[in-house]
Length: 177
Image 1 (cartoon, helix red, strand yellow):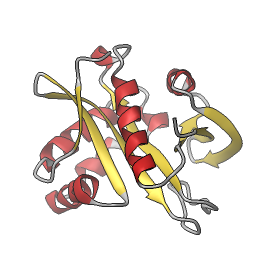
Image 2 (cartoon, one colour):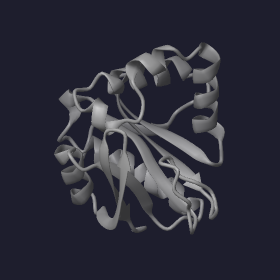
Image 3 (cartoon, one colour):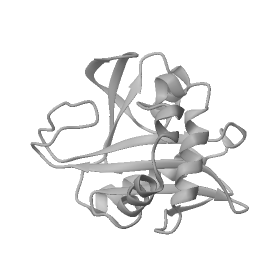
Image 4 (cartoon, rainbow, N blue to C red):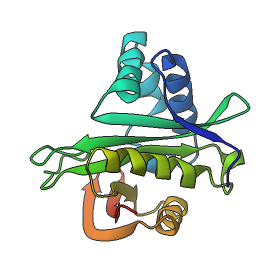
């Protein structure tokens, strides 16, 4: 059990959303874990972060959950709902409605404490309430730490692998619990 409080981001927290994203993009695994860079994030204006936060706080198609310990944000996940016929983050056609887990990050000093478990459970509950059966994600083939964490959380490879600029992404799915 984690000491972190898990909750959805709030509309006015765009600066915190931005700052946590920058921390995530500075993580040593970031080049294979995220599809953007620190430089790209720093190039975004305040309006970008305000809109991103508004969508994640109040939107019906996305939700961002954060883990907070002693008023410090220590982790985050975002879940994106995809309708049949839409495309996912990697440009693949979605055949059935799905919930994509993206932007998964936990500060190094809070890993191994159940933070990722609680974040993924919150994202899963939100996706299930929206009528989607489970969570789907992509993880880089070389990101052994993330792959092990996702397997421990009940995600299994679907057999779909996609070549991206930085290597191969493996599609994983966890059915609703």
